[in-house]
Length: 379
Image (cartoon, rainbow, N blue to C red; front, side, top):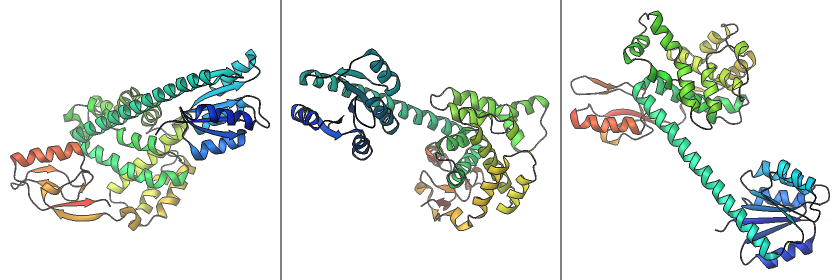
């Protein structure tokens, strides 16, 4: 379907003229006045191009286009005016981010050319936006796959943190959980900078040398430096860097401060869950750590968490006993994967992603794996 164009003016005869002269070449819609125009933008969009008259009652064209930008930031905005003074043009460009500024009367052939330029600009912006989104998603996925390979336990903990964030965050005041979820998933990607022997030693609880302890402590900063290089993940990187900070140490960097404080609560709750503590016991442990958490945020999390039943925690997941060939991406291994000789290949609790599924397929070519396999399959 062709991209739509909206023309807004407070004179019906002008709108009728545009409809007659432009409808064969463009998918034209019109709105009589700025208030109607905003309603059309909200209910009939998206529009590739919006052209607004400057002088309209109750709201001029600059104010109208400024509001349009908040509703539909990707739409190309243009201005029509019968008073082409320099100040008006400068305000239109600076305040309304206007792509083109035209004077009345604008001949139909010139208007058609300008609209075509606007549509090309819209397509270019959309293409760049789509490319960036695909690149961003792919970059995040690569990092997550790397983490799942080098540190399966950290990867699983990240998935658990992501799921807990989805349940808690919207109910404690976070409108957008995407940054929080990615920060939870990539918070330990800096593990790639730590030698495997040191990581295993730390995971097993064995005493570390001072140099080894410094390596472990620097994982959040290493994660920050890796994630910071990816466009649009600056806020995520800041959350990761501050994830172990106390409230008094946290500054609101790019809006990341409160997110970092929330992330710390989620990760420390999961740590208590892994120790076998109940929700009530876990909350009490955190509340007894004076100065470690934002008190208002911890109180809100406690109210939501303790009001969540165990049934809702588990959702409607099903425990299945299946053939190794039937394991799917998204399954959670309820039991570990072992060879017939007793060699453990994958610990229980591991989430199956594309990388792990490929490894399982390769192991099947070498080993005989015990079957059936118990998995938890989210519905």
